[in-house]
Image (cartoon, rainbow, N blue to C red; front, side):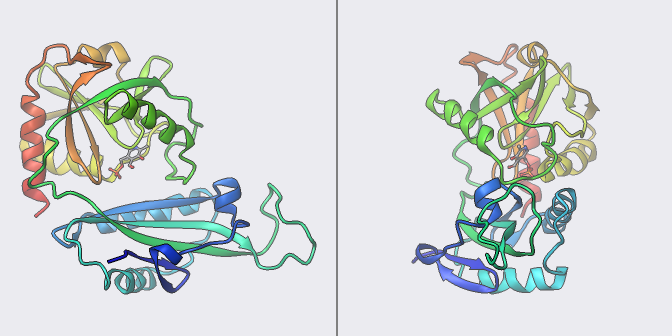
Length: 286
Ligand code: PLP
């Protein structure tokens, strides 16, 4: 069975889904995206993901093409064909292609024309977090060479995917990024460290994506269960000397990190607190 894809109101087989090469998303990464996990066929934190999509669109001055009801109706239309229990819904909105090429200009940096916004969506299978096979993982560190608006969920993921490929080649799941000596975030995750029973994570800023999972973990997992959290930046050295490290994102939930750059996390607390938080998280998604 082939996954279906939504493009501008129509549904296609994944093999047949196509957009124009003149789409500004293709030529300039002029677009944003969102990824919503579904666990046991139910969306998790849908509203929060929708609000972040809205915010990303505002930040690149792209009008939301649909109102909320229309978004949800179109999502339902696509997901009718989805028979997975655990999957993510990927949504991408780009400024699209010019409505006409009468001036014979096919590509220009400035978005001066009238464009047909391009809305595409697809779903992709993920593993259930309940019978999670990967309970912890390895990471590497790399310099954060991205631009300065990492708070926009932009489709421009060149450095993120490059760094994550290097991590993969080194047998790690994630590359944790470091800017001016301080940890920002992972290529597709937010980072937390634990030292002396206090949990630290970088405060929200233009240097990190405000992860939907990050906020849920802070409020519903950490604070609700009486753990201490501080919103403070920490250096790479501080991370390497932490008792525990864990990362969060929509498809993995909470993932303890056991090794960084092939070295065991300093005090190797056996990820005791991270694993507890992971258990709480998993109990809350169902
Ligand atoms: N930071 C970056 C750069 C990401 O790409 C992601 C998710 O893909 C995250 C953080 C985690 O965000 P969320 O929890 O909303 O999945």
